[in-house]
Image 1: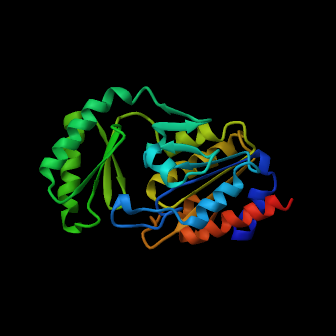
Image 2: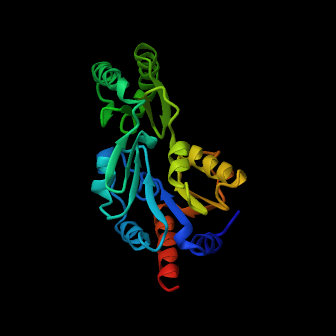
Length: 261
């Protein structure tokens, strides 16, 4: 397991050949009860801004829609992969994977049904491409939400993605943070990703596979520790930092190193 200094060294060694990608919720932003209340740490935003330019690529890979991410982290030059990679924002252009577009009517119907069947459970519509059922503020409704999600997935031909105290319904297309990261590290020598949740493990695995295949020479997989960190996460990463504040400190240290080089 790498310590923080070793991760900084790995990220700063060849900055122009390095792609640094980070998750949003629980990584740049502390965990909150309601999705709309999530705010990235100001120091994290500043650190990302300092990295854009010296680093080969800097981006956010998240289950959030790109519109939300771009509003929250308004840093010119950042790359965004939203909805686990169903939408990308690169070089000023938003692209939606055409394979998911035909499922928009099913997503809308599933969201409407969830609203009707789960009063009190937050139904979050995401760019018309997925819908998440949240029970963080009503933990006693967890079993109901999970059961309804399963029924809606079967009824509308969708798949379920369990997340932290929530479950997402999405198109049955092989897209996740791993496929998004695979695309975003192409052409770079070092690939890094920081994340904290179950959905991030696909990204860590993709980086490890890219290094094993020789598509990159170094993978730096950064786990962001929290009280809700999945038990499998430490085994999927190269090093751990303490919450969003710890990740922010790491990013700022890399920025200071490459600026002074």
